[in-house]
Image 1 (cartoon, rainbow, N blue to C red):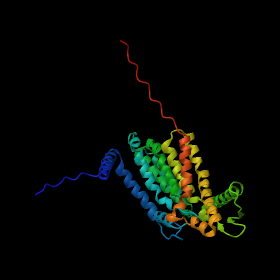
Image 2 (image 1 turned 120 degrees about the horizontal axis):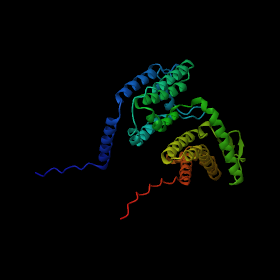
Image 3 (image 1 turned 90 degrees about the vertical axis):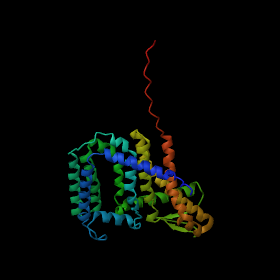
Image 4 (image 1 turned 180 degrees about the horizontal axis):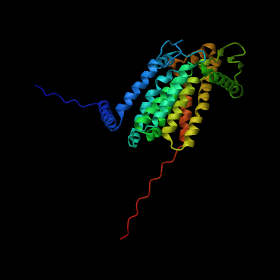
Length: 335
């Protein structure tokens, strides 16, 4: 009878086992975790049962349910798509894991002033509930969790975890309020496309409001709210914040990278609109519409992101931060 061949664990299994071991070690070293989980459950229960007072388009008393519905909705008339809010918690958890050694090395302790943040969050939620503004309550939800972390693990934890925790700001749905951003973005993009077409590409187009059309009537496109570049702006800004905080130590470099996210997002959307116009110049309305709809597998819809992210990488390379100098070796006595 042949002997059984021993199975060798795959690389994937080895990585998962290493993760499990390191996670359990970090979990063991983390103090007050039971207290934090208990308080977190109570805090989330408050927002689940008494979180949303609007009961209008989303008829649920749960703020968590209201957030889920807002993230799952299709882009509205203002072109806003808040679906990225579902991805932010995973990004924050991944970055907490990335900073785990720094966080666990801190002097972690119970810190009662953290309750002040919780009280502030309760007041903020009360205001949001009374005036029926769920977005204010969402801010309160995250401020309160931040306060609970301070209560259980102290001020040093709050300082070190401010990033990535600040990324939860991207979980606040913009909804109709985004019109104050989307309309100026649409007008800026369409004017830039007009300038480039006339002065650099020698393409004759006519712009009326948010419409672009050919003087001979071969093609016409409306730069709708969904084409304002709002989604690419939010994505570029979030990636810029993460890239800046992870890759640089000096605040001025971080500031430059984050500030560049807005013009780079606009540039990405200009590239997409120019691609549509050029395609329409070559093949008429059908070709332009093909690019506008995304092309095979939606590849052309990634143009704004590709251009913006490439710009961030180039800028980050140019802002390259010198490595810290190693301390000189100790002098050895003669003789």
